[in-house]
Image (cartoon, rainbow, N blue to C red; front, side, top):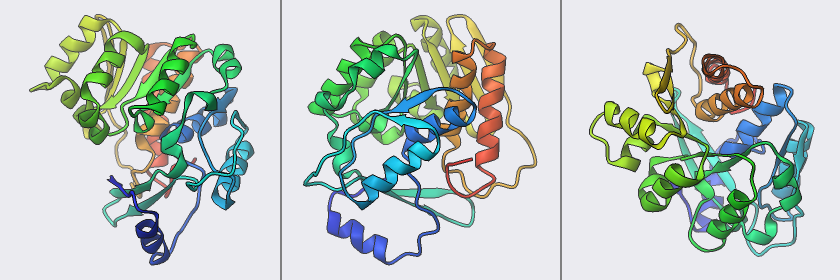
Length: 278
């Protein structure tokens, strides 16, 4: 993942490529759409500008039956954009220009929607010092239950102490891949991750690539393998849709095994197509 801070640099890159699909995405937005497609009642809060991409973003989520709890305004910064380049081996490089998305602030948060929700799912990509941190704190302090994705090792390394505090004291569920969680606690091996998760007695859900996934909640450790013989086209959204499947099981009171199965089912489907939408 490469963060691009200069809008002109991003526009130049954008104009030199043939874009296959334009989708109102983002990590948690992909998960929320997945939850909606599974029949759950969901909403989304995300900062966009009143511009062409912002309008398309809002329309795209509403088409997926996602309630959009945000009033867009004319902004100096444009709607954030992520240009995803997929290579023939199905791996992806994300060139991300956050735009206005990275400036989410406490006044952007719809408290009524937060308080009425059974669970809030936060995105580590948007956690930053200043207004974004205050927005997150406002959400966490008014939520019934809170889940968060660590998003990227880049985010973990940048905010290690703050993320560690969130995982240990504030979050009910943490989603991470193996690299992210090992970096968070400076683990030398995966058994140290398991020991850490058991100790804090919170739900930690870890995707491990070809080794499948594991859910740890206190002394309860459940694992699931990967589906075999898949025709993998694009790994974009694999973690997002895994989280959607797991959370679907969680909010519908399914067993941990069923949560892991649903997560694996959705992530297996998404990697056999281009893009992060089923």
